[in-house]
Image (cartoon, rainbow, N blue to C red; front, side, top):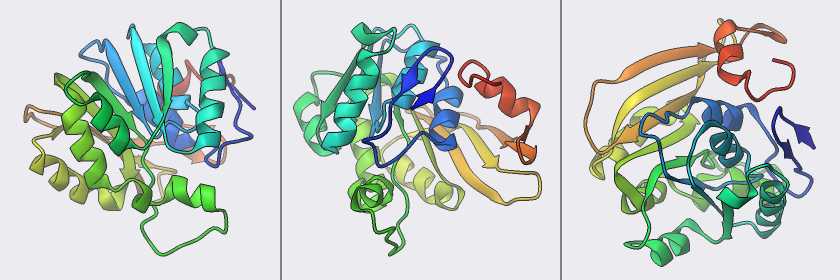
Length: 236
């Protein structure tokens, strides 16, 4: 169990536990367009959807999760939250979900912490691997489905490995989506950039590029990281 300020995440049945990536994306994702409908792709525990419902006035926050155990846990976390009436989770692949809702529903914000170990690597845990491998949700499929589900003024927000940033931006441009906000994440001032958070719209714009360092040393968090996450973490 992981206790946040306004909600609790049970995660005993999820391959992917609460981690810094999800918290970063949930806290950083831009809400400039005051989204009415939000979609969380590959929701896992439901963490990002719950962070966004806490941060926004969105009336409808949908989540889609392919793994049945994670889906069940996500529903449980939604139902136990203060915003149960605004949250809904679907047990489906993104492809099936898109086919069902394409041309019926569009979203003002689509967010995803997609799987991203594309190397031939196995942890020995099949469900964890499915949650982490790009094979189960290739970037191009994520972008193509997003383009079909995104409203005219909608935003796509993702967190990916920094080494994939240029490739992801190039793919997105092929579908008419362009970055307007980028944040590159370092664990410490000395460590290399590990993650990129990217926000896209359909309209090309000047990119707001920033860097975020999480810690100066072990458990000594930077002011920027504290400011970003203080509404969620109990001890911030």
